[in-house]
Amino acid sequence: MKEELEEFVGSLAACQKAPVVQVCVEGKDIDRQAVHQTLSEALTGKVLTFRPTITEESEMRLPELKPGSFSVTQVLADYFKKKEVAELANEMFKHLRQGDTLAAKT
Image 1 (cartoon, rainbow, N blue to C red):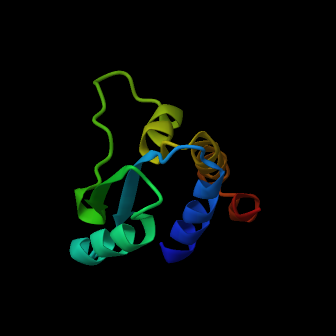
Image 2 (cartoon, rainbow, N blue to C red):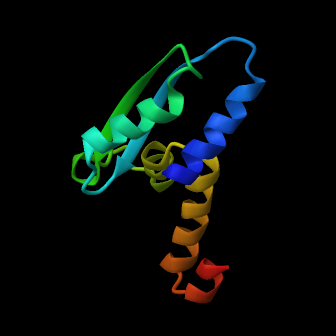
């Protein structure tokens, strides 16, 4: 998280006005107080305000599926949210479904 935060703080120099920042932290065994402290130290004076959203791995859920409308591609897109990651997961799934583990790794 610290490397990504440093990179993000560095990108704030290009902003003409202090932005409002929504920070999403997802993971396992997250120390919420430490996350808030780290964000506060890194962002104070550089942003107008920030809003952290912290999601524990145990709180993450797969999207609910409607009966009769199952699409692996759509489930992956909903779960991963980033188009590139969902497309990569879908390609890996296609190869693994055919038993081609070598192609899935490349």
